[in-house]
Length: 220
Image (cartoon, rainbow, N blue to C red; front, side):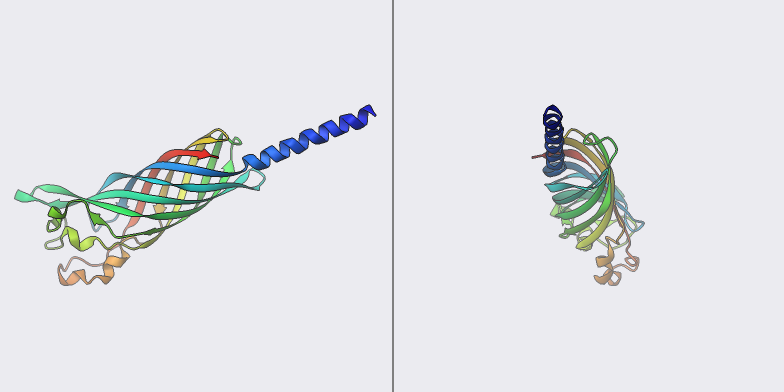
């Protein structure tokens, strides 16, 4: 009888452990991230500015030491471009960008719940770039003779990015940091605006987004 009860005890222990692992590996996360947006482009002189992302994610066990993360974030980010101000001085023109990101990341568990490497694609849907100060709308952008700040607000509304990052912490709290690089042309919509009629140099717009984020995820 004793071996039988001992076997039941071991079986119960493994069962509880498996249920706990299943719970720990299938969690809903609430996240907030600080973001720095930049544009890699030869068309404009841009400056990295700050913003934020907030949203929800679902972490699920996938295979062996791999998890899958599906998430949706609301984003509000900023960027600035150099323009010619009074007396030919350089003046920064600020823009704000709002939208949403849908991500699907593969997470490699380097050290269980404590450290993981996360890689995957992101689909971003956003509005146009909104001028922070309408009084700057007529400023001419650097590298152009007549292209103004208000002429270049219509960036592409759908963008694809790839994300690489790390998360570290504990079962219910993790700190994250990642870099997102846009593999689609974020300025493609400007090529359909007929801006070359206003400024002959306003052609062949091409640029890739760069987004650095760092934040915290609270798993429920």
